[in-house]
Image (spheres, rainbow, N blue to C red):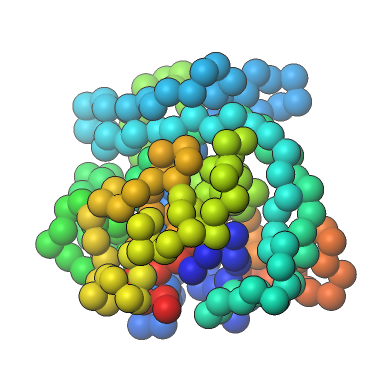
Length: 253
């Protein structure tokens, strides 16, 4: 359940609509800038501040600017392992541009506002994260959400895996915690020992260095990427039918 760990291909849900009881509960952190062209001014280059989007018939999202930077992505200690984590997480340097990401996981209420339904197993909790959604489900959610935005407003999208990990680590202000915001998972993550085997309302536990909540627990979070080996990994094969999930879950030990 460590923020820096990936799920292995055979533990990662596919992007198709088929959802079984074994499919991990997943949610989305959302960014509001499309990947900028090299000459573009990236969103979030100004001093960081929270940005609340609240428009008619559009869910309210609190966005956290993340200043871009260069970091070492991957698992630095090959002896560290966790349930379902990949052993092929060779460290490699990655540079990300500035972007914005959701302060909280997308809630059941927000999903229902856009899609009109609630696919979650743990219902009757508006402020709990939506779960039991496939990557394709999330794309339909984003399409429906973006269609409602006023002309000229930046579109919402899923973060790339590199963006997600950079944000989970605390960005340029990272204190190198084991989990996203602390060395003690109980302070920042709902997981097996403290969750009661259910999801919890977003934002109840401490945030990480950037002020983002629940990146090491509660529910897994989809990324935009197709699952594949890191550039420094010459052994692992790309899984073109699968997408990346990150974070942790209320059921992980």
